[in-house]
Structures are given as C-alpha cells and as structure tokens.
Length: 165
Image (cartoon, rainbow, N blue to C red; front, side):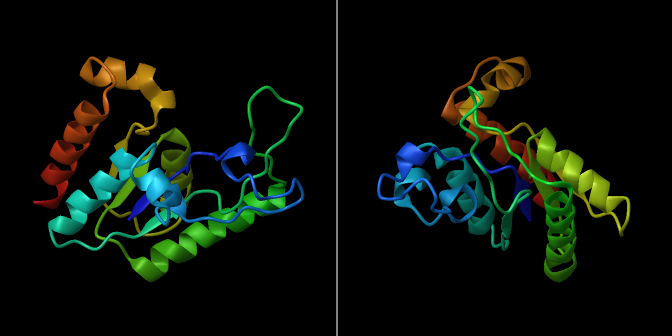
C-alpha cells in the first residue's frame, strides 16, 4: 500500500473547469497518461516495478480532497478539524480493508499521518521514503547526491526490493 500526499494540481491544468468546480482525480493522477509519462513518471515506474514483481499495489492519498486558496503565494491545504478527522478515519478503514503486507509512505505528511493511525491499531511493516517530487530536490540531494529522475527511481527500487524480496 502506497500512502502519500498527492501533488496538488493547479487550476491551469484543468482549463475546462470553472472556479467553483471541484476537481476529483486518482492518486498521482494515474488515470492520465499526461501525468504518468510526465511529472508522475517516477511514481508510475515505482508502482510498475512492484507490480512486475507480482505484488498488488493499492495507492491512496492522505487527503481525499484539497482546496486551493488564492490569498497565499502557494496553494495550501485548508481543512476544518472535522475533515481532517474524517480523512484519518478513511485511511484507517483503507488499512483495515486492504490489510497490506507493507505500508510505503512518500513524504513526511503521509508518514506522520500513518504513524498517528498505526499507534492505534496493529502496526504493519512500514517503509518511508522522501517524496519523489521535484519539490523535494534538496532532501534528495542530501540523500543521494543529486536529484535526477533515474537516480531517484533506482534508489526507490533498490530500497523497496530489500523489503519485498
């Protein structure tokens, strides 16, 4: 099971939508070849690597919905307390239903949310990775020397193979 904070899409990526429209998508926009072959290529290839080893992969977001607020220079996730609790319960239910062999988290937000839930239930094997997005370039440079898609993907594959094999 892969748990992550999905990259936030920009409104400009959806030119046909009006401001008041809600955008619903799949985690890491895996439904779209535009993202699978573009900005989310590392994630898609990582998932494919695991599936090619005959494992099933369930992918989910920590947050099920996001809201873009124009007042800030960057988009921020804005959730009322109840929505955050609902997302936590949904993730807990997903864990109970899927009952994964291992939980993989991309990014600190996903790790923290999973760790918060896992202390309330049976802990599962967990492998945490730096989020593979370009926004985490600095963390990747510290970890593997530089940020390049092939180097990040090789690192992810090597590390997950230690857990799966």
